[in-house]
Image 1: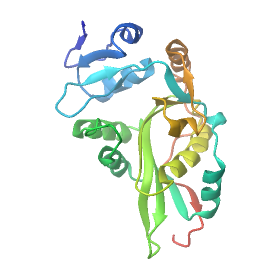
Image 2: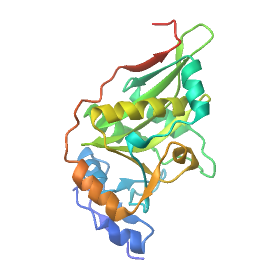
Image 3: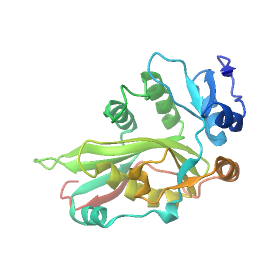
Length: 244
């Protein structure tokens, strides 16, 4: 298998369509995780995915799992939890803590994490530039103090939010963050959420499969368009809480 090798610096990538046809989506190996390269990769449907002590691998998966924000589905059980449980959901309140928790979260069938130290550093840089965002769910402890219970993060370019990873330290926490963040992202002008891989968890929210050519066309249309409202860093929802 002839795998393209990226130079240490630069922003160009091989054709992802060829990678999908010939290498199970492996576009290239090497390069770096500079903001410039990451911001060039995502609008082409390419993202880094590798393990510690491995070279950086760049992938484009097909078909692509996506969610149209206006089509989000909230199941009855989660609706009940959203009505009755005390919680707060915030945006961009604790990005470093969220990405670190996602990296530390054990996952079935996986040994270690793809969210390496270098990845955490790179995406935190994107966050500081306004291109990566986190959403947090907080539950009160026995004293009423809010504790980070779950959340997720991703990359935003134009009107597309590229979901990266989520974690839940307590029941329903990541679901709560996602269920309330998606309508907020829609208010900000997000027209498409890239979920990368199909999972039963995302399917319950209404995710669907998109052919890679159609996905690329959507990215070409939506990533150059500006948001209608900046994604902020405040409280989105506070439910049944007496704490400030």
